[in-house]
Image (spheres, each protein chain N blue to C red):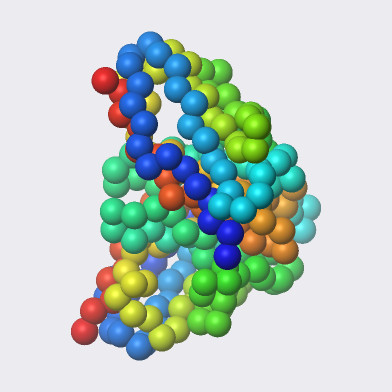
Length: 110
Length: 123
């Protein structure tokens, strides 16, 4: 079964820019996978950031952007803030109604 | 405002069936005009998210291959609820279980989530 890969952890300085990626153990991510991104703080349900590769969910600031970079989906955060410290998950549509989440990236802002 | 709320036993014995219900308020789960899926996602303690499966307003279902042989998701339109049944559970099924809504067109877009409920599998 195909695995969706994410960096386990990442750190960024306040005000800095970071790009998290979402790949496949076999093959390339494309817009046909409808990549979506979620963030989650401890004890809370995930919340949508980006869907359909690059569409921001309602209320999400434009500091967050989605794209395809090379063979991966990417989430870029510009002007990182302390409350961006969170777990970030991508999810891909694999066809035939199947969704697969990545393992998540723990982002530290320091 | 759409709200989802999971409910069900917090403790299930190994080899038994885990049963959860998601009650939806603020929208009809059987509304054909809006074309939404209703899904279940789980998260073992300290680990990542796993999609379990989803059901369309029409009743058609999709399941993750990892649990397909053990899982059933169904609708109860009279109560505006959908349910998850997972059989032959083991300790590996211990997790916070979330219900969520996602779009037909943007299938990976879960826009509303329940707060989650912890289910522990233990004797």
